[in-house]
Image 1 (tube, rainbow, N blue to C red):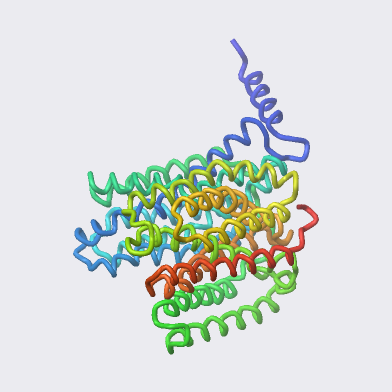
Image 2 (image 1 turned 90 degrees about the vertical axis):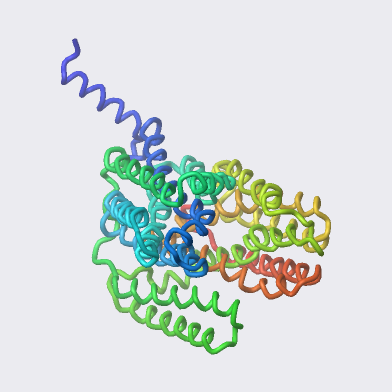
Amino acid sequence: MESTALRGTRRTSRSLADTTDDGLLRGGRAAAVLATLILTVVAFQLSASMISPALPDMSRRLNAPLDAVSQVSSLFFLAGAVGGVVLARWSDFIGRKRGLLIVLGVFTVGTLLCLFAGSLPLLLVGRVMQGMSSAAFQISYVILRESMNPRMFGIMLGILTAINGGVGGVDGWVGGLLTDAFGYRSLFVVILAVAVLAVLTVLFVLPGRTAATTSGRMDWLGAGVLSIALICLSYFVSVGGSQGWLSTNALLLFAGFLLSVTVFVLIEKRVATPLIAVRQLRSRRVWPVLTTTVLTLSSVFTVINFTVVLLSQNSEYGFGLNAATSALLFLAPPALLGLAAAPLSGWIADRVGWVRLLRIGLGICLAAMVVIALFPGSQWTVFAMIVVLGVAYNGLVLTTANGLGVLQSPREAPAALPSMNSAAFGTGASLGIAIVVPFVASGGLGGFTTALWISTGITVLALISSFILASADRD
């Protein structure tokens, strides 16, 4: 019978075999860490994608109007923009494992509130807490960067990016089935189970050596002011799209955004450990990452997830499809192709360069969008180009945009740029829809065509921004 000492020696040998000389993970330990991070981000992703079909049921059971219940989604994503910036950066100071446990703790409490909420206000509090936990993605990306070799980092980041896009719409479909059978609370039971399992795996699987990487203290004042700026920007986009960009409310919100940004810059110049140093924001290695992300989401995302979907369902000028067929033809294919292409994109990026692959992906997106804008009335031409965008955008562009957020971040603040890039994703998506919605709503094929050409023009700007982007030495 083996002695305890011998068994311990063998476990130590296996552990060492799964760690390279420079401390990076490989083999079984790398796979275990990836599985842990997948569970973590799946918990958040389910809370983002399974809820939409349940909104009518929430309205009925909570006796609340549907327009008020819609805040279940809007506040969730707004809280995600704020939480992604603040909590991810905090992990630089308290360590990745501790930061991820705090994020999951907030998420779990929020899920419990959603599960047992007897009123809409309490449900909204829970959804805000769930949304704040979007930092799980950014922290997971940084953990991969710090724990894996460059090749494995690219592949694994691609896997997490694919999950971030949803699993081909299947999660929303399952959410609809559960709601029909058991009511909306059943969704939170499933989400809670995944969250608890994620907490346990983080506790027992994630290496404890994911310690703090930044000395000093978290810049909470700067985080608060930046949060106000993000809130003002989000509501400016929403109000501008509905009431007009020059309406009083929109101008006041934009003024609040500019004032908050100004105060934020002044704070960051004076604190010892800023959220991100102003000098870094001026670098061509940093700010073009953010502008490219905003412009890409404002254009390509809008075409795939908004303009083409509405065009396909328009019976007079479009293809006259019902909602289910439209989703099957124009939403599921790009999501599924992205799911397959994202890990391969990360593998390719390690070989050809992340910035170069981003430019290639944007170039392909631009070509496909030109074809869609030229032939918007041809259903199968549009379908073919959406398939191309599934690989180019959901695969190449999203993977490299997320990867560059990690790779280009300042060494002294590894989570700073990923967290700000996360906010750029949400801002870009909402801005793009707000810009084109008046043209789409105006009716006629000309309105759709104008919206498509506007998105194509924004894609040109995204491509230009990517050429301004300078690759960091570690790319």
